[in-house]
Image 1 (spheres, rainbow, N blue to C red):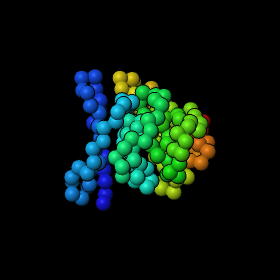
Image 2 (tube, rainbow, N blue to C red; image 1 turned 90 degrees about the vertical axis):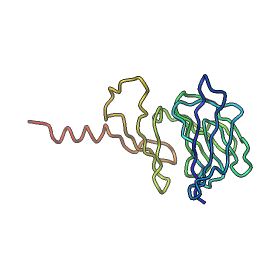
Image 3 (cartoon, one colour; image 1 turned 90 degrees about the horizontal axis):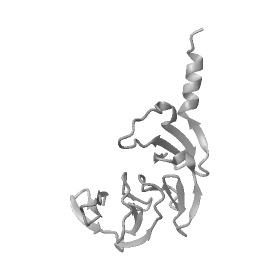
Image 4 (cartoon, helix red, strand yellow; image 1 turned 60 degrees about the horizontal axis):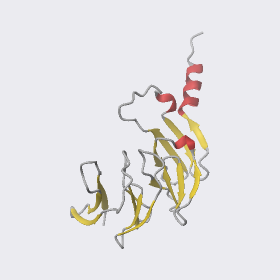
Length: 174
């Protein structure tokens, strides 16, 4: 069965916040979950963990099989709710890395501030892109919009700035 998540955002005039899990093949709702308290992230994206047994939506972890809340993560930013690390043991939520076994903060990674993340297929590399802020003009251009990090220790592997600097040096007019 292939499943997909949808999420309904809470607003000040709305008294509910829920998400639904659909069976893609039958197009039927197979589960609806409503948190007791939501974080109301502006750029929430509900995601399954690598085994499809746990869902993270709006900072709330759910046991999909039991249909129950497991834990609500502390909200330390306004925009990004987080994604599961492919190792299945961590959640990366903006600059915070949470341990799924203890729900304790493992580390903060300032480089990840306000970034969308994508893990490489083998789970060893993190690709980041800067999240556009609503109502803010982006004047930082390409130079700080894309980075790569080691998915094990979150250390930088490379930056677009470095590539741009090398490229500009190579093509400088004499």
